[in-house]
Each structure stands twice: as structure tokens, then as C-alpha cells.
Image (cartoon, rainbow, N blue to C red):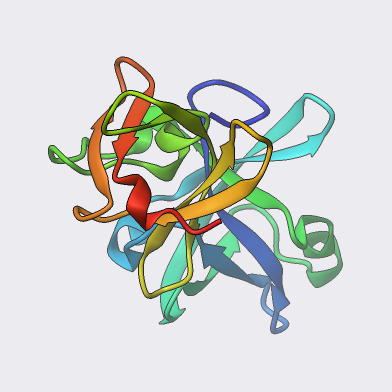
Length: 174
């Protein structure tokens, strides 16, 4: 989960103000633009343990993972500057339930990674997505960093209840 609060998920970032009519450019970290377009209420952390709730209007998909929108109640370009590069979070309750075999990246972080024989290999440090597929970044038991493709060939099972992933270690790149 997020560093700020369990149940709060990072879903995007305000990039910068655009134009003169109070719009901002936003990047989505979600896998589908359609899912991001369903959202309108976000949380922004403005300081240590302080947050602000904001609501978007006029949300429009402009390219791949980028959107334009306005923040309700704010129209001045100079006021919007304070939101530049602020991360956007949502309450987990806003997300749609996933189908079996689908996972939110946040849920995979810090899971123990075992090989098929029960040997602990390390922990998931991050989930990376470069567009051609997702990878699990693993900190191994000997403190090295490795990656493994997150696909059906390399990941045998994911068990969120027991906080573990079983992988075919032949796919790990160290």
C-alpha cells in the first residue's frame, strides 16, 4: 500500500497547468484509460500527513496515458502551479473488483518470492511496466536486484492471502 495510508492507492500525477482556462495535464498510472476516465475524486498529499481532496471535471483523454481536465473550484493558472507534479491517490473502494488472475501492482509489492521447490528467493521490491509487459523487481536474499517477467510462463502462482509468489527461477534476470 501507499506510504501514506493503507487503502489509498497511487493512480496518477498532475504534470502541469496547461492553457489559460485553468486546465491541467495529468498522467495516469492505471493500465486502462477507460478506467481512469471513470474517476473524478482524488487525494493529494500536500505535506507530511496532510492531504487535500480534489475533484476533476472535463476529464478528456488526449494521448496514451495523458489526460486534460480542470480542478473544480480552481481557475487561476498561478494557483494551479502548486499542484505541479503532485501524485494522485484514490481510496481503494473506488476501484472495480478484478477478475481471478488479475492484480493491482500495489498488492504485489513486498510479497515473498519462492521458487517451485519452496526456496525463498527474495521479496518483490516493485512492479515495473515498460509497455511491452510487466516485470517484478525482486530483492534477492543475498541483497541483489533481479527481475522476472510477470507472465504465465515465469510466475507459477500468486497467493495474496499468504503473501507469496511462486516463480520459475529460470526466468529471473539478475
